[in-house]
Length: 356
Ligand code: NAD
Image 1: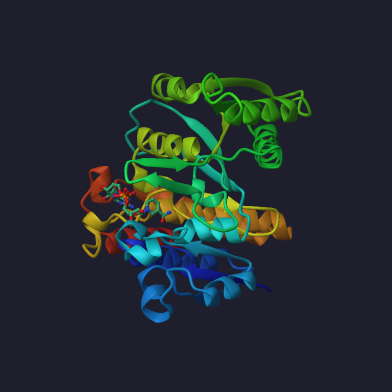
Image 2 (image 1 turned 90 degrees about the vertical axis):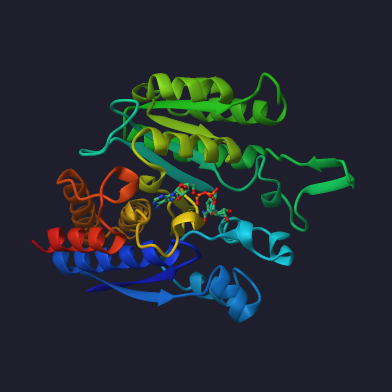
């Protein structure tokens, strides 16, 4: 029986609550589906890393992750870290940069039992993860921002053909498995060279996929289109910051940010990570919604299955996904979705349905 080594980074705020819940549900699905085993390796990140190694994403964690088949990462509360740590890339930015996880895949899909404010929708955002307007990703050394005087700051945006090409290929390849439609999101009417290059390269890549219909929108107009006719969109490809903002909007439109999953990938590695942050306002109250990180783990299992050609992983993913969807459809929900279940009650309800 194949054994996969999975890193687990609990993180800050609601991170430990929702990550623990995810591992429990994954164990229940593995027991139910059979055929594979997981070896979970707990690794320090966030405040735990600062306390043990004076680093929110210590080298021991990076070295250990290198030896895994992939990892599940809880959110970090980087906005609350001491100034010396805020000067560096935050833990998820650092891992994306360090492992060159260039593709951030963020689906937004309506679910039975969940109120969507835009009707039916089933789209997936491919966010370029390594450059663009997130200036700390652009630098070998430094943060990509300069304070010229106390009142003047320059922040860099970087756009390269290489980065646009690889995220575009990932998006078009996904479109070929879906409704064969790609929307490129940019701001080439103003940021003519930077996002103009992104648009041009995505269009060029699109020519290699003649079956796929391509259109493009400016980021500002795109927010309106998404609210007005979310169902029109299939695959959306965009730069780093636009993708981050657009995916939070899409996640909330189809139900709640707490439901929004994502994976960060390249050809060899993957990191499952909910789209939301550490929610310090509700941390430690046992009320957080763990669905985002659970569905991220489902996506991670699908990625792992295709990377290793192992259909048993797909069985685990389907079992986990079915357990989550059935629980929601039967009306067991956390407070952000209008329910009353605590995180632990909701998790137990999923595990129980998986075992049934
Ligand atoms: P947030 O996503 O943590 O919270 C925004 C709102 O959504 C809050 O009201 C929160 O209670 C709610 N929310 C988020 N996730 C939820 C869940 N699973 N269940 C129920 N409600 C949920 O965003 P923020 O407040 O801007 O950021 C808080 C911290 O998280 C900051 O330190 C920020 O840097 C960090 N952050 C981390 C990541 C990451 O780890 N990938 C991403 C975004 C923000």
